[in-house]
Length: 445
Image (tube, rainbow, N blue to C red):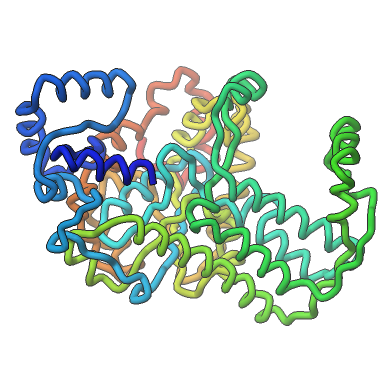
């Protein structure tokens, strides 16, 4: 709201705010000319903003010219504004995942540069859709429902509620996280689902949980404290008996497998539709191709475990597409080593790495669902045209570049520089050991 009021205030003086990151490629030269033809006062102000590491710049120009240079500026000009009616769109989740350091994010970046693909990541916040696959997530909850243990159901549901809290909140980086968090993780993790769903995520989750539960019985059970230290437990007892008020034994309703899957699928579909609605309504669209397109592909990075993709598809909306990315295991191993030790995908020991990677890859290859596509990172980069055709056939869409984003997120040249890092690795015995264990997964030697 503050930003919106500031825009309108500056327009009283014929001044527009630009975000340098969102300038259309075709308008960059026009933008540079405009920037150089400003008063000394505005040039000084922009130098000050640059010193603050701001992406924003203020320039004197007509609103219509500003809208053409950088879309998504609020305008009073009805000839330029075009709204997307989200009721006419078919939301299709596209889940992109890998085995760790395989290049799945590059596939997300490649697709988001095309018309009709939405990467909902909020500015300044991490976003991976981990609600399904992580411990205590939807896959684990679904498995527990099959057992329907009155004595244990609360624990499974509470684990899921705790998982939603992590997925709901924003990441936080402040003085406290810098001091008290590990030096390599100076922020509290969060995946912004509350923000992305316009604060509907909690309501969707409460309705989902209520749809599952048949009987609640208040019961203060020792297992409610199973993850707390003595001091944490003491604090909880001092907080107005919070745990006692929230403690239950639960009987879940009797469902068939199809009924359970439908409840889970409807819950996820509400989340996905809300993300798309919220995303689209926060922008004005200027490309008629975007306006007329009847499908919106929602990109969900890291949404499934590759070895559980088949099982996960049973609870996802039926149109969902899953893309699993693999990579030369030698580069996977070296990329993992380059990560900080608290976020490393695999152990340092090369034999342990091979055991884990082989197990994941073997179980993934057993899955034959038609809505799963296996993409090799190296082929996407070196055989881009052919792999693009495979993606088009799989997604049932002609991939058309969005001129607003072309080249901003994905670079073939940069990606090529990430391939073959193993050649410069000093320990050739380790590289040879990986080659011997994965003779069919080497991209080239």
